[in-house]
Image 1 (cartoon, helix red, strand yellow):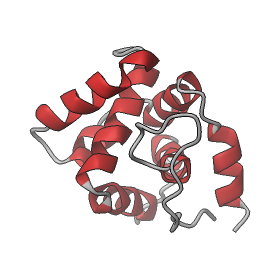
Image 2 (image 1 turned 30 degrees about the vertical axis):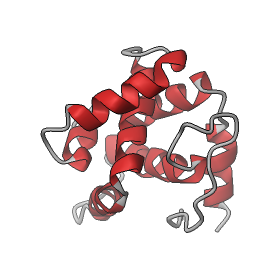
Image 3 (image 1 turned 45 degrees about the vertical axis):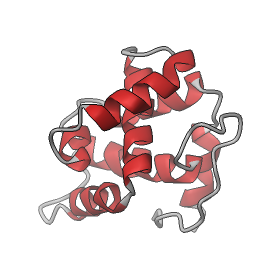
Length: 130
């Protein structure tokens, strides 16, 4: 079972990204479980995912949203700074509600990480070892 990452290692290859690859990978793992209905009746993964996103600082939430937008094709990887700025400026609902309402959140985050040259699979594998 994946445990939330505690370190704040910045994602390699992109100093502008204000969230670690491990934190994005944790969201991907939990979002995939949530999307596939693996929550069961208690919804533990949904609560854990919601709380984890809510506990990220504003910069991390904006970066997470930007990575999802890049993966969805709303922005190109080279427009990361613009995507982060837009995520900050246009935040009208809690980030956790916005992201958890996004169909295929896990897929979009993985695609965004790949587009930014980050290794989603390696980060996910590292988290699942615990």
